[in-house]
Amino acid sequence: MNSANEACFVFRGNDVLLPSLPEAPVSGETIRRTFPDIIREGCFTKGRDACRWFEVAPETPAPEGMTFSTLRGTWGTFGDEWFVRAGHAYQLMEWERTTRYCSRCGATTGTHATDRAKQCPSCGFVSYPIINPVVIVAIMKGDTILLARNAGFPTGRHSVIAGFVEAGETLEETVVREIREEVSIEVRDVAYVASQPWPFPHSLMIGFRATWASGEIRPDGQEIVEAGWYGPDSHPDIPPHGSISRRLIDAAFADIRGRAGGNI
Image (cartoon, rainbow, N blue to C red; front, side):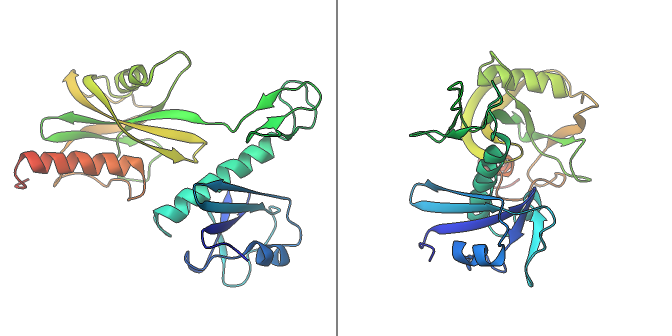
């Protein structure tokens, strides 16, 4: 029987099994009876919550009344809490799946005795879950925010600038470099706002706000194909709720409205 705060997730490759209702979780026992050919499974705790994940074969059909969907495709479907827990489970499942062999000597790895880590019984090498730091930044200019369309976004979707941290960089240096590379402007007053784990792929999104300092917007034409300055009541399609990008955008628009006394 599941504890009150336990959630179970079934993954088929990059797809997750969708429950009929997020508040009606399926127990681990039910999953084992439904899927007798489970490839691997694991569990973890975060605070008072427990999660259990199961990986099934690529050809496994969904049970009647249920369906498999890409994890990204569930964004905004079952609420923020469900998405965050599913993403956490997916990251750990992927880590388990891709670290079965030692990256140093090729031997089969084992579970570390005390840490959430893999340890090679042959050479002793220890590996931990992969976390890729990514900065994401809301750039302010007066009563506007910079919104850009990435080449991989759905048609019309715009968001804030983001990019991976490179070796040897501080987070603030990454903010300045990514903005310069992607839209050719300079910023100042770079300040941390918040962070969010993001399973696409194994990322920790680190949110900032910055102020435009100089330059004209020139999209790089590769990652960023369109960008501009937008106000709270005149902007293109933006990401749905549940992501730090939307949180940064909403906070920026709220501040703009607050400075204008709610008249914008």
